[in-house]
Image 1: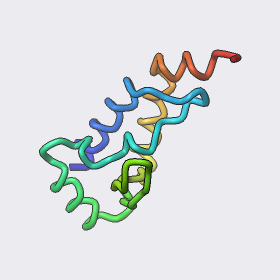
Image 2 (image 1 turned 45 degrees about the horizontal axis):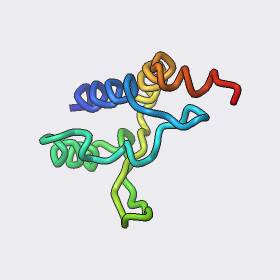
Image 3 (image 1 turned 45 degrees about the vertical axis):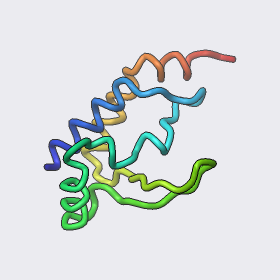
Image 4 (image 1 turned 90 degrees about the horizontal axis):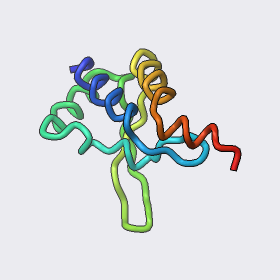
Amino acid sequence: MKQFIKDVLVEMHKTTTTDKYGQVSRSNFTPILFGDKKEEVEAYCRKNKGILEYATYGSTYGTYTAFTVQDYDIKKSCSEALIKNQNYIDNTSNPW
Protein backbone atom coordinates (compact mmCIF):
# COMPACT_ATOMS: atom_id res chain seq x y z
CA MET A 1 0.00 0.00 0.00
CA LYS A 2 2.86 2.39 0.78
CA GLN A 3 4.26 1.85 -2.73
CA PHE A 4 0.84 2.60 -4.22
CA ILE A 5 0.65 5.86 -2.23
CA LYS A 6 4.15 6.80 -3.35
CA ASP A 7 3.43 5.99 -7.01
CA VAL A 8 0.25 8.08 -7.06
CA LEU A 9 1.91 11.07 -5.40
CA VAL A 10 5.00 10.95 -7.61
CA GLU A 11 2.81 10.79 -10.72
CA MET A 12 0.80 13.79 -9.50
CA HIS A 13 4.00 15.77 -8.90
CA LYS A 14 5.20 15.05 -12.44
CA THR A 15 2.28 16.91 -14.02
CA THR A 16 0.65 19.19 -11.44
CA THR A 17 0.43 22.94 -11.77
CA THR A 18 2.31 25.22 -9.41
CA ASP A 19 2.11 28.85 -8.40
CA LYS A 20 4.76 31.37 -9.41
CA TYR A 21 6.95 30.19 -6.52
CA GLY A 22 6.78 26.53 -7.58
CA GLN A 23 4.43 25.54 -4.77
CA VAL A 24 1.79 22.87 -5.22
CA SER A 25 -1.66 23.87 -3.95
CA ARG A 26 -2.90 22.26 -0.74
CA SER A 27 -6.11 21.38 -2.57
CA ASN A 28 -4.13 18.94 -4.75
CA PHE A 29 -3.55 16.76 -1.70
CA THR A 30 -7.08 15.49 -1.19
CA PRO A 31 -7.93 11.81 -0.64
CA ILE A 32 -9.81 11.65 -3.95
CA LEU A 33 -6.37 11.52 -5.56
CA PHE A 34 -6.29 7.81 -4.69
CA GLY A 35 -9.49 7.07 -6.62
CA ASP A 36 -11.37 3.94 -5.61
CA LYS A 37 -8.64 3.04 -3.09
CA LYS A 38 -9.24 6.26 -1.10
CA GLU A 39 -10.76 4.53 1.93
CA GLU A 40 -8.15 1.79 1.88
CA VAL A 41 -5.35 4.39 1.88
CA GLU A 42 -6.96 6.31 4.76
CA ALA A 43 -7.31 3.12 6.81
CA TYR A 44 -3.70 2.14 6.07
CA CYS A 45 -2.44 5.56 7.16
CA ARG A 46 -4.46 5.42 10.40
CA LYS A 47 -2.77 2.11 11.25
CA ASN A 48 0.69 3.13 10.01
CA LYS A 49 1.53 6.54 11.43
CA GLY A 50 4.12 8.73 9.74
CA ILE A 51 3.05 8.29 6.12
CA LEU A 52 0.24 10.79 5.54
CA GLU A 53 -1.33 13.16 8.06
CA TYR A 54 -4.91 14.23 7.38
CA ALA A 55 -6.41 17.60 8.36
CA THR A 56 -9.47 19.69 7.53
CA TYR A 57 -9.05 23.01 5.72
CA GLY A 58 -11.43 25.83 4.88
CA SER A 59 -11.76 27.66 1.59
CA THR A 60 -14.13 29.96 -0.23
CA TYR A 61 -16.22 26.96 -1.25
CA GLY A 62 -16.40 25.28 2.17
CA THR A 63 -14.21 22.81 4.01
CA TYR A 64 -12.22 19.93 2.64
CA THR A 65 -9.90 17.21 3.90
CA ALA A 66 -6.32 17.18 2.67
CA PHE A 67 -3.15 15.43 3.74
CA THR A 68 0.48 16.25 4.33
CA VAL A 69 3.17 13.78 3.32
CA GLN A 70 5.23 12.81 6.36
CA ASP A 71 7.27 9.88 5.04
CA TYR A 72 10.80 10.97 4.08
CA ASP A 73 11.15 8.54 1.16
CA ILE A 74 7.84 9.63 -0.39
CA LYS A 75 8.67 13.34 0.13
CA LYS A 76 12.06 12.90 -1.51
CA SER A 77 10.61 11.09 -4.53
CA CYS A 78 7.88 13.74 -4.90
CA SER A 79 10.46 16.54 -4.77
CA GLU A 80 12.56 14.83 -7.42
CA ALA A 81 9.50 14.49 -9.67
CA LEU A 82 8.44 18.10 -9.08
CA ILE A 83 11.76 19.65 -10.07
CA LYS A 84 11.46 17.90 -13.46
CA ASN A 85 7.86 19.12 -13.91
CA GLN A 86 7.67 21.65 -16.75
CA ASN A 87 5.12 23.79 -14.89
CA TYR A 88 7.51 24.04 -11.95
CA ILE A 89 10.46 24.84 -14.21
CA ASP A 90 8.53 27.56 -16.07
CA ASN A 91 7.17 29.16 -12.90
CA THR A 92 10.41 29.20 -10.95
CA SER A 93 12.70 30.27 -13.78
CA ASN A 94 10.56 33.19 -14.97
CA PRO A 95 11.97 36.38 -13.37
CA TRP A 96 8.54 38.14 -13.61
